[in-house]
Image (cartoon, rainbow, N blue to C red; front, side):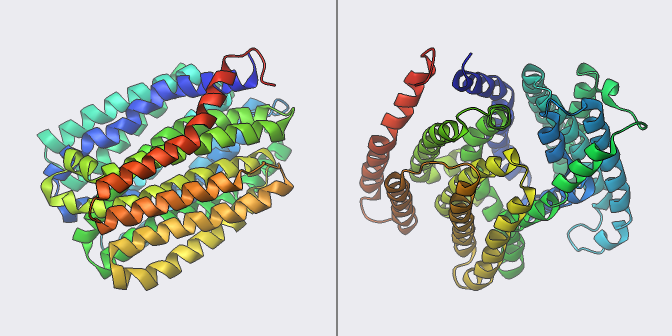
Length: 463
């Protein structure tokens, strides 16, 4: 099997397992928005995002190192997984020391132990699932996705619709589902075989820690880029506005759905394939970029439709934040792809450095634009932040793996998306006609590339 077909096969298998979990986000939105007020949903979202911020701090970013070093043929897999387990446990115990401080934060107070439970279970599930992926047990990885989706759905319905636990039920459902997933993977993959507390090679431990430590501030900075606007919207405009803004974030995750499934498979291929790597990266990125742009172009005109179908009437106004968040999400996908180059070359420090610009710009723009434009300003700030870090990485990664860029296509696609956003948000007269025309142009520009790549997948060899 050639490397392109292997990449697509892995993407398909992973897609079977993870597609359902991504779709669950949309299926559950009507339930969330009917059983929770705007304010409660905003608080629940802040709790969830705060927990996600604490994850890399508790695990010291070790799960990224588990994937990267787990793919190395020369590394002892027991050393890799054992280092991950020990680091995760020690990091979580250190985080417990800050419980009194967290309890003083207004919206966390009363939910501190719930946040810690989320962090622990999510860390353990991530550790197990990423090691299983590094061992290339793709079918098990996909099966876990299906089972996790089913458990999350059942537990959420029980805690929210039956027991009416509100904010607590929202978070607790995720905690229990993550715990079930971690136990399943540990038993099914017999991960106990890879745990030992003596005889671990120091070189492996130090190399993994050296790789993962720069990823801690990187994760925090990405969190700042992704989530700081929600805190600032809540502070400057109100928790009700943040509830609307948080809901609007769910629609652009359709782009993440398309991208995330592929990236899980792509990281395996990016590390394992070494021959003609520049051509490989160029061809794959060209097709990947076209798919993302096309998906974004189709989602933007449907912002009102998605919002009407997926949320209650009280959340309908959230549609206006979707277009720029779709653009932001699209460029975050490109940034993630370029990040795989740093992963291949083990340049985690550069991952951190290139993220600083995005975080700094996002915070600065938020303070300027949110007081003037409210949540609209936050959405635009997020887009500019991701666009900036994409440009930085596009130039810098050429010194590591030289991707041949189709600059004309990149610029035209970006300008068309920007025009779609302005037409949609401005609700211009005959906006449906203008949006349809721009979608047609995007299809004409990108479809030939996608079709050409698809045809090549069925050939024995890619010339």
